[in-house]
Length: 235
Image 1 (cartoon, rainbow, N blue to C red):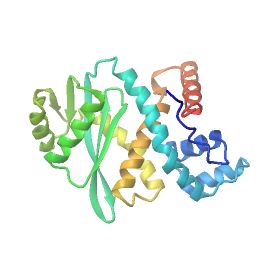
Image 2 (spheres, rainbow, N blue to C red):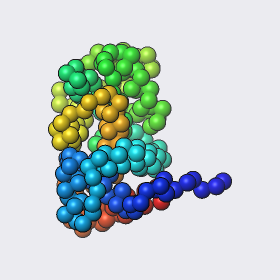
Image 3 (cartoon, rainbow, N blue to C red):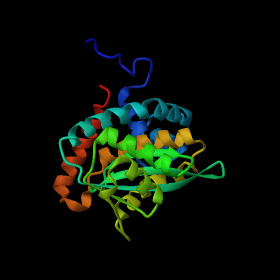
Image 4 (tube, helix red, strand yellow):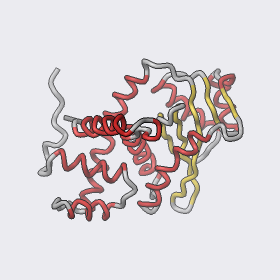
């Protein structure tokens, strides 16, 4: 089998700069122009339009590579609890919904944008989630009846758990994406929402070291490992 073509071959900038730009824009709550200013301070002249182009072109590629490796590792372990929730996102003055799933440790498993939050949307979201990650022993949701209807169709209605404050894990996981939404002055299209949410989830998972659970030395080692893996993405 021949090696795939180098994705950076048509660009004058180095892969290191492209990875840095994508990481800064996706991981941190920065606008395109703020990324441009931060790079300029470091002697890297990149237009904010170039930042936009690079994240749209390379962001999904980086995210897919990170997600593929993480899913392969995670399939070796039992998924004993998922937390599902939907967050409101205003696009063009109309309310849309971003369905999100995280595991018991806060790992973002899936993001799925829809116009409605009915049974059909919930069913499509859960099928996509299970196709990629397999089944879970327990699934915690809020009181939205679409979840119950979809899970009954899938034959796992007995796995559902609903309770006050039981879904705080996924509610808290919305916050990083909300901060990004404010930084870029909201999303303009459903396609942009879906694309950014998927990329943001993978990058967030990659750099999320749960520093409140480990000591400083362990955190620094894990952070260094995450940066090293990021610098090797798509090599």
